[in-house]
Length: 75
Image (tube, rainbow, N blue to C red; front, side):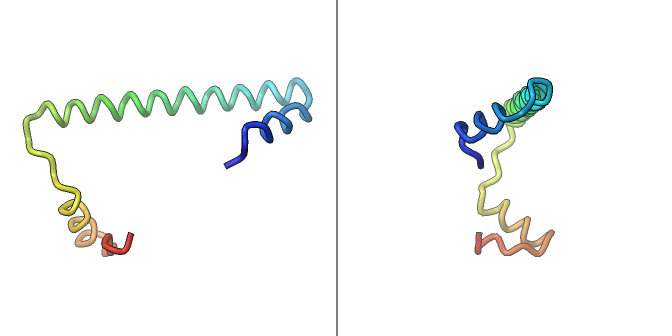
C-alpha cells in the first residue's frame, strides 16, 4: 500500500486535469466501498434476525475444505 504522503506527491506531479480524474476515481472507489459495507451490514443484520444459530468458524473451515479441497488448518 502506498503512503498518503507518496500519493499526494504523485498527484501533485500530474496535470490538474489528470489529478482531478484520479481524485474522482478515488472518490468513486470510496463510495463503492461504503455501499458494499452497508450491504454487508444489512446482510449480517438480516442473518442475525432470522433466529438461526450462527455456524462456528471451525465448522465453516471444515466445510470449505470438504467442498473446495482447501486445507483451512494451514491458514
